[in-house]
Length: 341
Image (cartoon, rainbow, N blue to C red; front, side):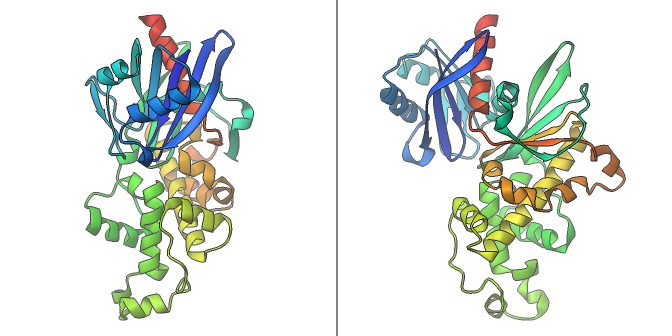
């Protein structure tokens, strides 16, 4: 019996896992909002109290750079995890911390076929890596690399590569974000907060061009905008809901621009890693917008690699629509480490 958790910047998902020769099974699944708890230990205590169970092992998949340090800082959250203190507080014999996308990539092969939606058909190269990546509160990436008769999973920091704009509108978006943040990594644009950044940009500069370029005031430009009069949306969830329900043209344009940029980022990741084995989209945002993603410019931008278009042309892309992949992966990695101990 293993306590498994998948903790991002917004949600903390918990379950009890068991691993045997037939695979992984999960029970007592429950999700909490990170903002409702001061620490991950407090959230774990609340979860365990709701189950009445006392597991002795725990594996935590977390949006963080995992090091040998006992204290780990979450990338997009105020939380941190002190492994030794958490183990003692929760009455565990062992607690391991795992990068969330390393866990996600480890768990994908344990998911049933209905846990995926095909975004782009293709023919995978069996000897080539598979890249697993996607937007949540941040942007995660891991590689599944063929190794001898098995595979190895490698966590990366692909979300921190620089955002490469395409066309005037995205170039202007980069200029605006650079002025606000300095360095603009991919996750400033393709993530939950990235949705808000795109939305704020389009709201302030309709058409994607700064008002002073057109020789008019920002106020007049906004009044002339087709989005004038819309209720301002405050969260990524609001933007996704408004876009998918056709309640807001601005939200729809935001999500469409997001999907196009995401396609370009996935194509760049395939080029950079040689992932001819395929690309698998995960992250909390991807599954929420998957229907709009299928009709967006995502695939067009994925393929738009100039002389390298032929390299990416036949790469298949699947989207994970299950919340369980990282929990499966955490359980598998815990079992492997126990077996190696």
